[in-house]
Image 1 (cartoon, one colour):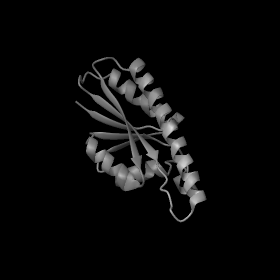
Image 2: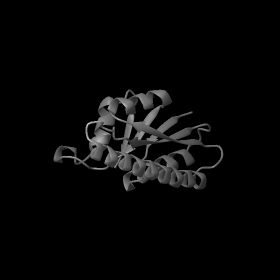
Image 3: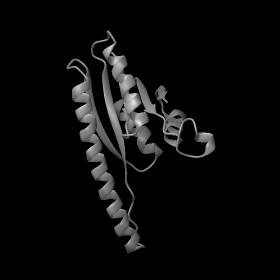
Length: 148
């Protein structure tokens, strides 16, 4: 039995990583494999020093929460259509403020492997991995599979 943790964000690369895991699970003879799809919600902390900024941060947080709910609905529909009953899956949204929050969320799930798609955002040196996947690769206490 293998437990996969897939980081999802709705990007094409994230969806390719889901397709990779789907193919792997559907072609596996290992009954009982499971997948956890995990989305990290960005939360902007409010500042009591600047009321205008505080209001913009609140609006940004509301918008981010709505995007997260829409993303969750989308991935739940995909999983219901894609995975037979014998494959266990679940979707989790985690509010994160920093890299330590992400790694702590991984530890709570205790996967056998973390799977992440690349995005390619960031500076030239991060052109191939992207800053998020690079951070995961450097700090995850679990093996990481990066899907381009």
